[in-house]
Image (cartoon, rainbow, N blue to C red; front, side):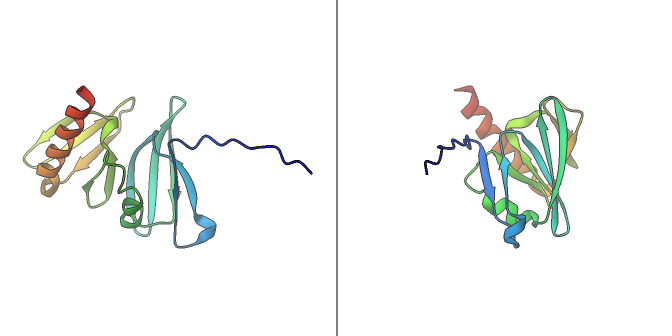
Length: 132
């Protein structure tokens, strides 16, 4: 029996492992805007085909963040948020904390006061990398 070759295009897909094997999933990180923690769950917010898609997965934000560690464009900007720095359109705020606006949406993600210096450094590094 000849089995046809299946070609999968997972260039930007990342396999995410959870505590339960049946809950493991693939995620297209190119479209991921941000991740919001809610206890042992995360809400993934993606922008695909001109619309915002929210999806809840059973995994802690820390576990999720650890699996994205090789992707430097993701930053833990708040105890409950992980943001894709490449999707930021505008940063607003002051010394009390920032809010970032995301490309193609009216969504805003908070940056905690504790993280502003690290956020500025990461944002500047990624901006310089993309401008060269």
